[in-house]
Length: 137
View 1 (cartoon, rainbow, N blue to C red):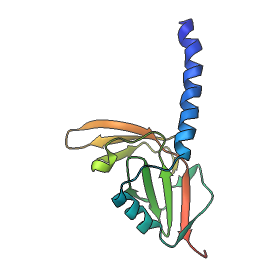
View 2 (cartoon, rainbow, N blue to C red):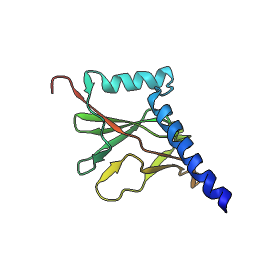
View 3 (tube, helix red, strand yellow):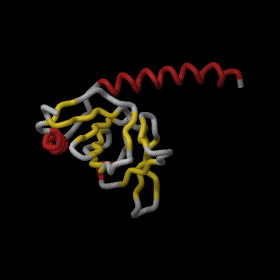
View 4 (tube, helix red, strand yellow):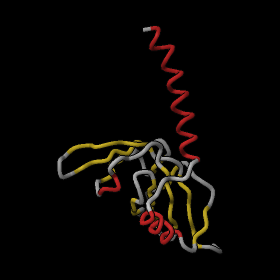
């Protein structure tokens, strides 16, 4: 029991540090994924990252890769770099999130579901949301 209690904080610290380092690196995208991202963000400029976004207005989800999600809310597109990787998401599987209240927030757990087999195939945590708005607004 004591060994577990000593090791757990060390593992948590290592996990937290690796998550921050991975988030700073650009996601690995295929040429097709990069083209889709460029198309969506064309003419838009990034704003200050946010921990949460409101879902009081409709926010359509577009999956760019297993690591990168876009939430479209009106003329604003929120780019979310997930913490970890939602393995299999870019293969057409669905992203399932439990929403408490009217916001999606950094750290919320998202699960990847394959509805053809009724199985969960992976999970990740949402990262910060970076808003992209039309230039000059």
